[in-house]
Amino acid sequence: MTVFALTGLSLRLDDVRKALNSKRAALYGLLSCLGLSALLAPLILTDLPQLLSQLPALPALHDEFFAGLALLCCVPTTLSTGVILARQANANDALVLLIMLLTNVIGVLTLPFALAHVFGAAAGTALEPLVMLEGLAWTVLAPLLGGVVARLIPGVPGLVDRLRAYIRLLQQACLIATPWMTVRKARARKQAASGLTPRVATRRLVSRRTSWCTSTARRWLWWPPSRSRCT
Amino acid sequence: MHIDSATLALVAAVAFALHLTLLWGNALLCALLRLGGRGRAARRTRRALLLATSQKTLPVSVAVLAQLGNSLGEPGLVLLPCIFFHLVQIVFGSVLVAAWRSRDGV
Image (cartoon, rainbow over all chains, first blue to last red; front, top):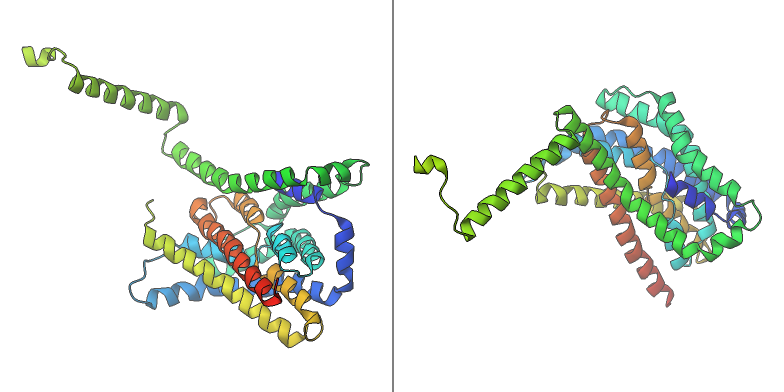
């Protein structure tokens, strides 16, 4: 949520207005990101595994990897990387900004239905689009639009422009943290399912460390032999 | 679940192939539809379109996975190609931008 709020906060609507001259290109960008690339998703789920299995000497990939690639085909365009690269390449960065805004706002509304169609048809997984839509609206749309609205408060745009470098660093830090948090939650769920709670894990860790320290001390110091050996 | 380096390399290669497919497909369509006009004037628009349409967001992918839980399988494994794709798009995007800049004589 922090990433989306910061993106909305640093979004200059004046830059977006400049791109309104390129409506045809913006429309193509929107259709390509949300429509054309999503057409690759069913191919990735069904045809790509068969193609890779026919190639010799390649390791077998889990179904989850193909699901991740199919998910990628359906999601909107990147929030900040495209704009930064466009500026470096002397490209129309306002157009990239407009496409980013359009695809991320409209994509939140269309993505649940696209995913339900792709994964429901190909993988037989039942997804609930309306539940996903509500979750994405709160996680993505609300912070993004909240950041945009916050820029309307007097003084905020100037403050954001002064702190732009720090805001970008914070965005990247949150971006780095999000996959780590997802993996951590998945691991915690797995541990809870296997009965390994944090308290039990800590107790096991402490006892293992204690026994390691004891055995190391016995190897380096002379300690009397244990009673079981004496008797 | 142990993932060996060969599997990781294959996932990264497939993510790279997907990025190239998106780049190539969109470049072809932009040229066919003559988006941005003709000649050098179209260059700025087409470069912007290539960058915008071949790149995908990681935070939204994570947000979607958080909603789906285990519906698609182990979330860590589902997220792995998304992370590789994100890295590939940054690295290859930088290479592409450097090539464009050298072509422009900057």
